Image (tube, rainbow, N blue to C red; front, side, top):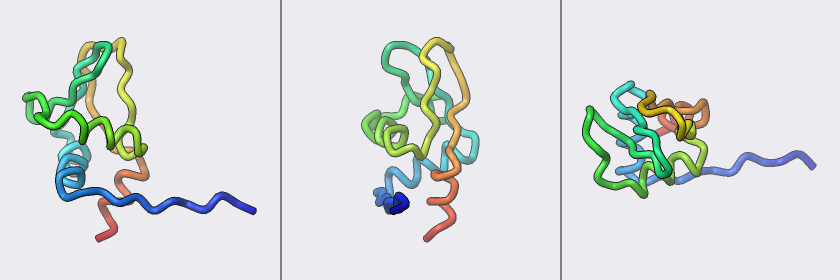
Length: 83
């Protein structure tokens, strides 16, 4: 039996942050625990950023790179186009 895709439910806050990532407004600052920057400021809710990465909606950052763009995955972009 083939694997069935799992529906992902995100909150309004998570969706807003995913939209900011998809719009190119976000970067990751590297380190042992990467920090998501939105418009140059640290995201106040790091748990939302971590959840988007854990769900595969935002690409995981390379912790060895000091600053890098945050990017939405194909799954993240698809979620934004649905409702």
